[in-house]
Amino acid sequence: MKNSKEYSKKIQKLFRSLKRKYPKHEKAAYDEPAEALVYAITSEKITHKQAQTAAKRFNEYFVDLNDLRVSRPEEIVEMLGEDNPTTREIAARLKTALRAIFEKYNTVSLQDLRKIGKRPAKEALSQINGTSPFMVDFCMLTALDGHAIPLTEKMIELLRNEQLVHPQADHQQIEGFLSRQITAKDGYYFYTLLRQESESDRKKREKTKKRTNKKTKKRKTKKTKEND
Image 1 (cartoon, rainbow, N blue to C red):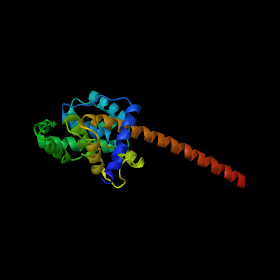
Image 2 (cartoon, helix red, strand yellow; image 1 turned 90 degrees about the vertical axis):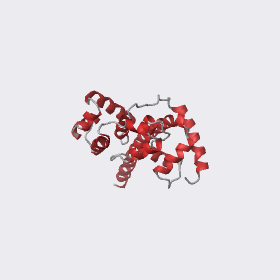
Image 3 (tube, helix red, strand yellow; image 1 turned 180 degrees about the vertical axis):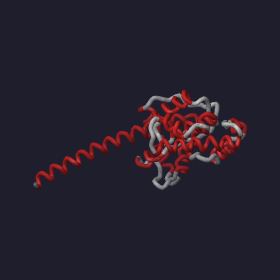
Image 4 (cartoon, rainbow, N blue to C red; image 1 turned 30 degrees about the vertical axis):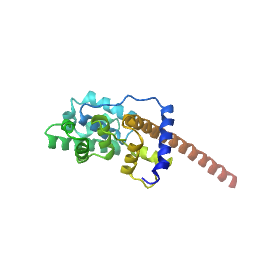
């Protein structure tokens, strides 16, 4: 990534700041890589809190991953708590990915990926229909002892808005850059901090936008009355 030395200092400063701001989360660790992939698919487009709630509902409602695989999309959407384009997309991706896993391995499990190297495992994950870079990186980080920094769109948006990465860098370049700045032992820690900041920052910006819109409307109303 261009100007990596300049951005490296900014990332280290950000990391120190976030560690002071938020508590440390216990690292998520999955014995079954397919379960990590399911959580990643579920959580990429919604907040961490919403994903946690959905994961709990999944565990209570579905017997196992195969039960989730053969379920109706409407059932998955219901467990996600709201019927909208995002939850329908999540349901579709879950169905697609679990079907692809079953067709390739004749079981809803990715334990075979533990028997091969990390690079082949990452390649195998990338080839599963319905997966994205975030999903692959999350699975590698939490289930296959890989070093990665999973990035949601909100996280990338925050990094760009705060000028913490080069504006022309794409997802792959940003993830690769962050992986070189953050050590493997801190990978999950940094991911959780940056994700929390991106989601809280979005809420703040939405509130600020609402307040700004209200003030703008008041000024327009006042101006209209004065003109009358």
